[in-house]
Every structure is written in structure tokens, then in C-alpha cells.
Image (cartoon, rainbow, N blue to C red; front, side):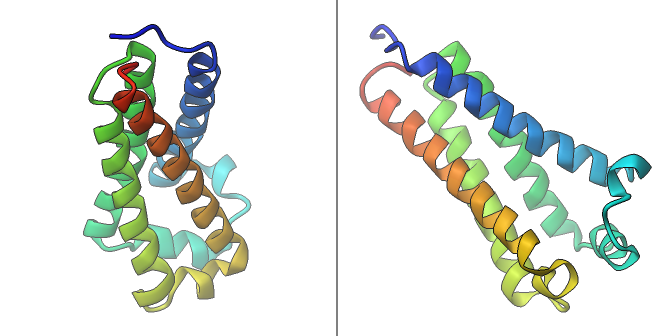
Length: 141
């Protein structure tokens, strides 16, 4: 295994912080943390509580695989890119359904801000995945 370049560690820290924020959001939403849900409307809270199980599952896989992948980047595991790839695919599938096929759609319930957050989240996770994949190719992971 090749020595990690100097920039690997800052990228790994950013990945870890980013995915930890996603894990916190998922956990606080799932457990109905009152202080966290204060900014949600009653319709939004009901929407999240009534998501189909398979969407909830994709969200969970996306979040926890992302966090695991970020941790694997720190350990320089060759599995980091694969696990991060699973995270991205899960998040894309969940967001695709929530924004286009769900009735009502997330766009209808939460507006453009929620759609923007999902798209930015996926874009950042895709960048983290691409970085990990490149580090794998270069023999760093």
C-alpha cells in the first residue's frame, strides 16, 4: 500500500464530518427528537413518519454506509470506495423516488429547500466516492 498523500487526511476529516451530520439528521428524525423537529411543519413530520419501509431502508443504508465508508477511509481500507458507492446509489434511489414518484412528493411537502439539500448531499457524497475510488486505484486505499 502506498503512502497516503498529505491531502488524504483533510479529505477524510471532511468526509467523516459530512457523513456524521447525515447520520445525526437520520437519527434525530427517526427518533422524533422534538428540539430537532421544531423547524418542521406538522405535515413534514407526518410525511417522514409515514415513509414506505423500503425508502426508510434506502435512507438508512445511504447514511450508515456513508459513515462507515468515511471511517474506512481513515483506516485506508480497500473497501472504502465500495461502501461509499453503495451509499451514493442508495441515496440516489431514495431521492429519485421522493422527488419524482412519491405522492405527494417531497418537493410538495417541503419545497425546493429540501430538494436542494438532497441534491447537494448526493453531489458531495459522489465526490467523496470518486475520491475514494481514485485513491483505491492509486493504491492508497
